Image 1: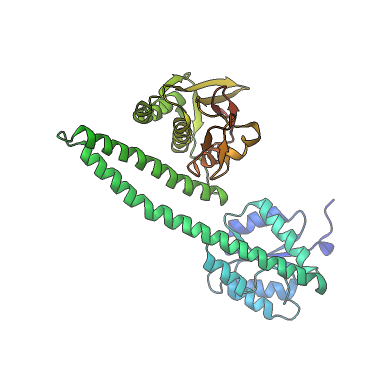
Image 2: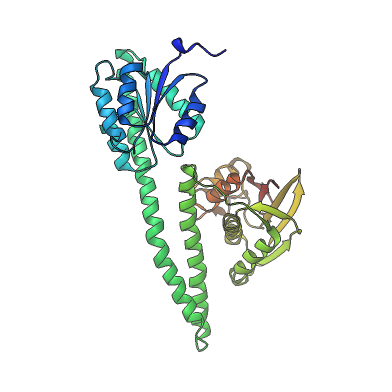
Length: 375
C-alpha cells in the first residue's frame, strides 16, 4: 500500500522539458512525493518550501543552468548535504567535472532509463541519511567511482576520435586500390597486391566500426534499425565478397541456406556475418570447407557457420566473445585468436536484436551459432 504523502520522501525534479518531468513523475511517484520545477527560480523556491531529500536536476535550462542552481542550493542553510543528481544529454569529461565542482552527487546521461533513475535516487537518499562516521567511507568510495567514470568518458572520447580520424584515410587507401584495379595494363602481380590491399582495408573498416558499435553498446545506444530481409540473399553477398580470400587460401565456401526471411538491421547483420566468416577463414586449414547453413529451431531462425580448424574448448566458449581473447585449441597444437573485437561485436549486435550467439564443437573445428527471433 502506498504510504501517505506526509511520510514519503520528497523528490524535487527540475527540468524545463515537460515530457522529461512527466517521465520522472511516472517513474518515481509510486514511492515518493514528487515536486516539479520548470526552471532554476522555481527550483530554489521549492527547495525552501518543501525541503526535498533529493534533487534531480537538469543541466541545460534557460536562464539559470543546473550548475548555478546546485551551487545556490548548497548555499541554503540546511541543504549543504542535500543529494543532487544531475541529468544531462552531454556525456563528456568537461560536463562531468563541472557537475562535481558544482556539488553534484551523481551524474545521469539522457535519455534516462526509468530503472536507472529509481536506483540512483534510492542511492542518493541512502547517502543523505549517512552519519558523519559513515560519510567518510562514502566520500572515499565516491572519489573512486568518480575516477572510474572520468576514465570511462575519456575512453569514449578517444574511441570517437579514433573512429572519426581513421575512417577517412582508410577509405582513401581503398579508393586508390580500386583505381589501380581499373588499369587494364596492370601486371598480375600488382593486381594481386591491389586486391590484397582491398581485402585488408575491408578488415580494418570492420574493426573500426566494431570499435564504434561496442562503444555504443556500452552506452546503451546500439539500437538496430530492423527491417524484413532475405537472410540467404544477404549471406550470398557476404560469401561472394569473401570468395577471393577463400580461393587464395584453398578453402571452399559452402551454402546450405533456406529461403527464410528475418527481421534485422541489414548493416549490423551483414557485419556480423562478415566477422564470423572472417574468423572461420583465419582458422580453416588449406583444402577444407566452411559451411553456412540455416534452419528453424524452437520457433526461431538459426544460422550456423562451421569451419574445420582448431576447436574451442568447452571452458573457453564464453570467453571467446570477450575482446582480445586467444584460445588454445582442443589438441593444444593450434591457437584460435581474434583480431580483437570481431566476436565481441558479433555477440553485442545479435543480443541487441534480442537474439543469441554461441559456439559449439564441430568435430573437427568450431560452429558459431546465431539465433534470431522472427518478431
